[in-house]
Each structure stands twice: as structure tokens, then as C-alpha cells.
Length: 146
Ligand SMILES: [Zn+2]
Image (cartoon, rainbow, N blue to C red):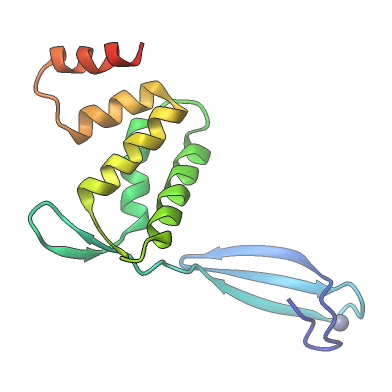
């Protein structure tokens, strides 16, 4: 961030305030001490999601994060892990030529990531995602892990 006064790039953030979809920051130039304010907007990747019923909706980061946090309830590092999985999934979608993805594919990506990170959260998510009808199926999945 260049200082509007002297155009040097060394600025220090004095204060950060979350304002919904944007962040307001008070900055101070380390060179000339000029103070200024910046607004940073969260960039939403342009991803479309095709749902099970065939309808197409805009990708919703919050909704995905909520779904994953269900699996991480009372697990350690809940927030960090949910955030990192969401980031990994967004990254891999953005690398694709086609930015349209089915909700099933997203679910499978979540499962693949959870499996590597936390086996309890993984099983919980699988049971939510596949809507296990019986405890037996859940146990079968659990046995596959061990
Ligand atoms: Zn300056």
C-alpha cells in the first residue's frame, strides 16, 4: 500500500475494523508519518454450484464453512481447520477451467480433505453427507479407517 503523500510503500496498520463485507484500516506511513484510511473488500471467487435438483446457485463460502464446522464441533482448532479446508477447496476449483461444480463434488472434496486432517470430523461429515440410515453403515465406514 503506497503512502498517498510521499508514495513510499512502508506503512503500518494502526487499527483494523471489520465492517461486514469489508475491512477498514487506519494506516500510518513509516516514512513521513502521514495517516490515511483504506477499505479492503473480500474478493468472492466467481464459482457456480449445481445442486442435486439441477438448479444453479452462486457459490456461498459461509454456507460451506457452516457445513464443515458441523463436523468439527468441539474438535480442536475448529476455526483454523474449517478455514483451511474452505481455502483448499476454493483453490482447487479456481484452478479448473470450468468454475461450475456440483454440490456432490464439493462434498467429496470436503471428505477427502477431512480424511487427511481429522478422522472424527471426517466420519461426522460423511454421516451427514451420505445421510447414513443405520449405525451399521457408520461402523463400516469407521472400520475402513482403522
Ligand atoms: Zn509517506
